[in-house]
Image 1 (cartoon, rainbow, N blue to C red):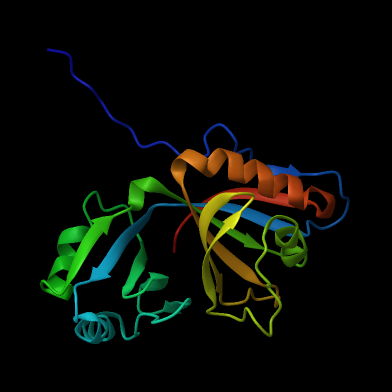
Image 2 (cartoon, rainbow, N blue to C red):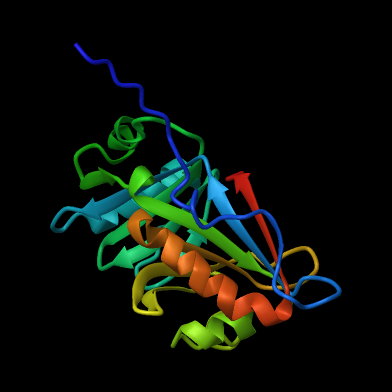
Length: 209
């Protein structure tokens, strides 16, 4: 009998190249980071159960899940709106099966689906990040309409993504999280790198913390 050995691989293994990209001199205007080692579970409240699901999330992580497009940071998790009465639970780690622990939290009030292996997580930040995203996204990212905690299920260059704004970096620049299906990750990475090239890009990979 043939024995198979499965080793996790980055969805960006073909596209990712660490270090400086683009021709701009001086400090890089954008940091593009592939985030590894994360758990991602879709939570879908059952009919009439969203209030109970929200209460359970508040008890577990001291934060309520967004009821409209948004992202909320709690104790060890980020809850990202994905549609009416549903959201992602994003957390650090590399749990081969993160569903059972969440099944305890929600106790039959929601259906759960592990999406960890099906999504690529990219973090974008830097002084020119909004300028680069404006080239490929129709979302208005101005502070007045897309502040910290805002989120959208949208598209970038015809590729569906979940985009949200996280807490600002220490230097005050905006930080965006982006989830995309792994099968589109290479293409999207190239699109983002091309859009950011004129500003200078620093590409890296790091575990979620």
